[in-house]
Image (cartoon, rainbow, N blue to C red):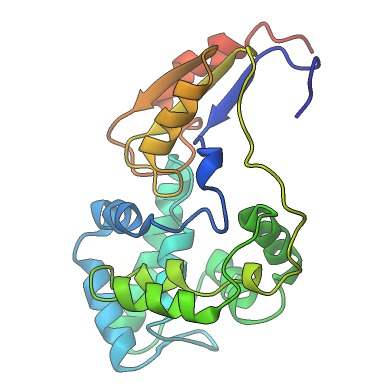
Length: 247
């Protein structure tokens, strides 16, 4: 990205560039479900079963069986105590709505509901979608997505439909054909990846490391999150690595 202008590079959760198109999350259904079940166990089944029977009433919004997995997916962020508390609050609210018929959202969930179910989050959503589409051509036939949903629906009831569904990538103008990004340099880099990373499969991170001979790689075990730099486990290695980077 910045030839001749970098000293050390730290990458936390590393994509394999060969699988970024057309949507980086395809094929991560199982690792996402494993990550969420590691945290919440059977609570997920109760929430989803209730949402199938009737939409969950959360504040002024109605969250049905198609929308509920979006919230459960979205909170699997960094491996920090703050995110732990966030996941707990979201799941507690969903469970209360499932058990009692209604729940009031906290400030975070209120903002998230508005962003997901109204136009409030369109600016952020557009930028994030542009990144995830990776400026590469994807399927233009919506039947491709439908068949993917049908293949994954039974095996991955939480995230199969969400992560196989049609996206704006299918309708945006086809970008100029470009070769897949290749990695061929000797810039030193420090990579960290959790074995249970729900966003970037560990196998893909290892492949990137293999293609980047000057990189160092740290495996974080026991974590099911994307973004492990904020947790205590890798920080003792990340900070010394970057300590002497020129300001």
